[in-house]
Image (cartoon, rainbow, N blue to C red; front, top):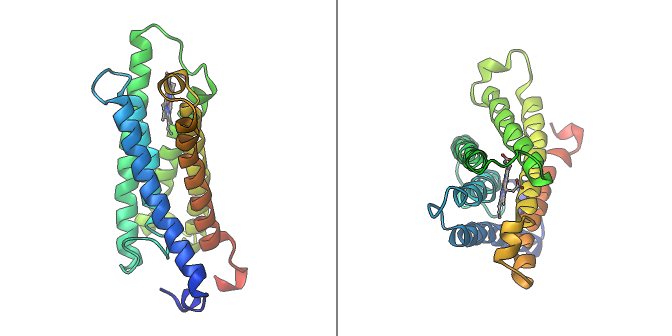
Length: 222
Ligand code: HEM
């Protein structure tokens, strides 16, 4: 942990750690909940909510939270190691998102239903495209030779800012998925509100982490 963090009041550090750990547990529980509800393999459709939740609520959230200076389970490891784990988790996120999109697309074709007719479908397809582009955008950070004259510090900032937007799009797609007829007919009342709390809370925690790490710094600190 940096000297900057050590100078912070203990209570402040503990509350940030508790908040981060709680978010990680919440994401895992949310993913298990959607898995139980959708029963992957029971139908072609069932793969869609399962794979999308795994991609965005689990892999992408973990890929970002592993950089959390307070609650990351690997906070003591080198930044390079975290970076490696980050791209592996993001790679898994892209694979699951592409497979989840293919499942719902093919399912709609089989049922002769029109594509991308709901806000969820439209924002969802945009999210999957953006997450693909965001991953390609991360390649110069992995292979600095590709950066060709760009400053790596600048690229990292752009990657973090666009990554945050991508994450918020993912959270919005998850939220809209929870508003779908399939989900609202499966759960009701306070369970629905509890489920919605997961993408909302995670989005807030991730937003806080990324803005603190990259955007809230004074320019002289770069
Ligand atoms: C970030 C996560 C998600 C993304 C990117 C996403 C993406 C999409 C896309 C692109 C479609 C339209 C496919 C087409 O029209 O061919 C769709 C449909 C659908 N999704 Fe998702 N989805 C996500 C999560 C979820 C979740 C968690 C649920 C359920 C809880 C869900 C339930 C549905 C349903 C019921 C449909 C069919 C109705 C409709 O087109 O709105 N999705 N999704």
